[in-house]
Amino acid sequence: MKILAITNQKGGVGKTTTAVNLAATLAAEGQRVLLIDMDPQGNATTGSGITKKEALPTVYQLLIGAASLAEVCLHTGFAFDILPANRELAGAEVELIELDEREYRLRNALRANRGEYDFVLIDCPPALNMLTVNALVAADSVLIPMQCEYYALEGLSDLVETLRKVRAHLNPRLEIEGLLRTMYNTQSTLTQQVSSELESHFGSKVYKTIVPRNVRLAEAPSYGKPVIAFDKNSKGAQAYTALAREMIERGVAP
Image 1 (cartoon, helix red, strand yellow):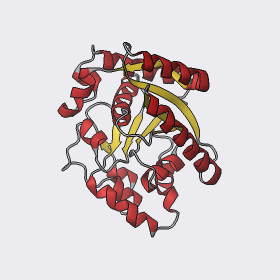
Image 2: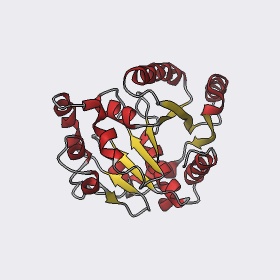
Image 3: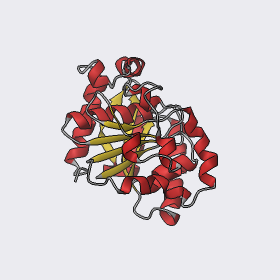
Image 4: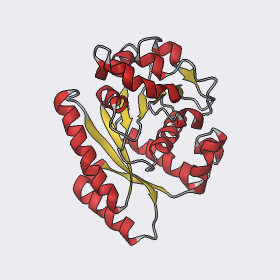
C-alpha cells in the first residue's frame, strides 16, 4: 500500500481536483484505491458523489477515536472508497490538542488496513495545521500539484522546508513523490519558464503528465462526478488517466 498526501500550502492549485480524479483513474486502471478527505470543506467528498447526509460518521470521528476506519469508509459509485469529511472536521483541530499521539492519529488508524488498498490518497487542507500534519505523518510521500506561476515557486520552497521539518521530527520516511503541473496554459511564456525551472531543479520528480486548463474538469464536481465519469474524452480526463498510468509505470504500486 502506497500512502500519498496530496498537498500544497497554497490554495487553488488543484489539490482536490487531483485527489478525486486520480482516485477515479487509478481505480479505472484496476488499482484498489482509498481517498481520504482531510479538508473540512469536504469538496473531495461531494466531488466523489457523496452527499453531506451520507457522510456520517466522517474522518473526524476516526481521528478522535469515536469510530473505526471500517465504520467511516464509504464506497463511491466510481470503484474507489472514501473516508468522507464535512465542516465538523474543523473541530478536530481543537480536540486533537488534548489527545495522546495527536500527530499520529491517522497513521495509527490506517495501520490495520495496510493490505486492503494499493493506493491511499489524502486530500489535505491548504494550510499547515494539525490535519495536514496528520496526513504528512501517515504518508509515505507527497504529491504536489502546482500552477506554473511566479508565486508558486515561492510557495514550493516553503512547502519543501515544511516537509524537511516533518521528516526530521515526525516521519523520517517522508519524501516527495512528484510535482504535478496543473491548470497549464500553453500560451503563456511565464508558464513555460516556470515549468522549465521546475524540471531543472527537481528533474525526474516532475511528472511528465501535465494537466491543462479544462472546462470539463471545472464542471465535473458540480455533478458529483470525477471527470472520467463526466466526460471521458475531455482533455482533463485524458490527462488524469495518463497520470495514473505514469504513476503505475513508475513502480509506485506494490
